[in-house]
Each structure stands twice: as C-alpha cells, then as structure tokens.
Length: 250
Image (cartoon, rainbow, N blue to C red; front, top):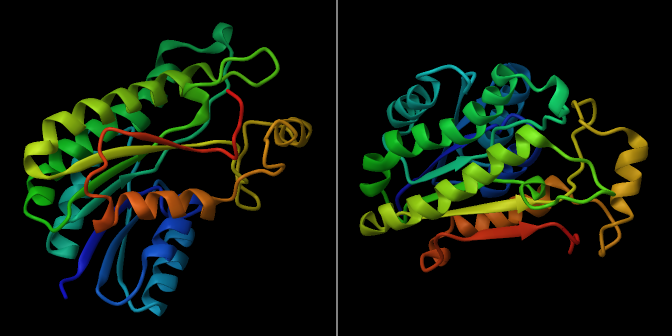
C-alpha cells in the first residue's frame, strides 16, 4: 500500500491539528505548517510520528509572496510527492469599516484566497501524478451570515467568499486531472486554550445559544468532515461547500 501524502496549512493548532491527528497512521506522511507557532507544529509532528506517520514541519507566513509555492516545494521534497492539499490557515478579522484600511483588508485576502490560488497552482502537477488527489479549503460561516444579532467580519467574510468562488471554479478546471476540490464552512468552533479570539466570552455564549444543536463546535467536528472529503471514498464529490455548524441559522 502506497504512502498517502498531505500538506495541511495551519496545522500547528486548532482544526488543522485535529485533522492531521485524525488522519495519521502507518503509510501516511505530512508537512505540518504554521505561521510562527514552531512549538505547536513540533508537538503535532511528534503526535503524528507516535501514530506511525512521517511528519515534517514548515514555518511560513502565507501573506508573503512566494510562501505558498515554497510550501508546496517543501512538501514535494520532504514527502516525495503530494496527494492531498488542505488550505486551513487563516484568521478572523472583525475590524469595522472605519478602521479597515486597504492594507489590512488585503492581508485577509492574501492569507485566505490568494494563498489558496498559489497553493493550488503549485500543487496541480504533483496532485495530478498522485493517488486519489484532493484539495479542500476551510471557509467559514462568516461568508454566509449577515445578521443584526451576530458579529460581522467584513474582511474575513470577503476573503472566505472569494475562497469559495475559487473552490467552485477550480473544481471545474481540475476535473480533467481527477483532482476534486471542495470546502468546509465551520460554524462557531471552540478555540484552543490561550488562542486569540475575535469575540468576547459574552459574545461566544450568546452565539452558542443560537446553535440548534445547543453547543459550540469542536475542531474534531470539522476535522471529521474534511477527513471524508480527502478520502478515496469522496471521489464523486467536487465543487461543494459542506457546512459544519450544528444547524446554525445564517
């Protein structure tokens, strides 16, 4: 059985870390990426190795031109190819209109959407040569939720909406290469302890009360959905956005 090779951005913590831990086992190999959280990335890589996987780490700020293509290069060299690309890296930006200057707005677009495009471009030939090739992007409910009783994320909403448009377009363009392209749109997901959050505890509590299933989501909930979309069994699903949000009314 051949080794299945994964590049997962933003996998030093949160959803990305939960995903690679779920997927790890013998005959799997990972490039664990973080922007600057080397300690988190190394801890995740150690967990993967304990599960029998091969794991390397890479630190890169996806806002930087060339960082995305460089990550794919690093994955190709470390893993000897690539079968799965998951673009999970990102951040929530609640900056209001009066303070959202073009540079700050562009940062959300660069990390979320522009980096995804660059990753997909660089990874295409590797994925086309791989087995059961998959691309999955992590979007967000903020690209769909525009309510007076919920926080608004101007920059993040625009970036995630662009990401979803790219998913649908790339699904068409990459279909001849057998590469499926999908997204998950998490709802309100618990943060790792000590991690930055764009909402106050009171806002989190109020938000949780809006979820029909009665709780916030967990990173493992989203990881389970992505794990299916990158599996060989998902080969006839492409161009889709799967909402993992507990039935959140958006």
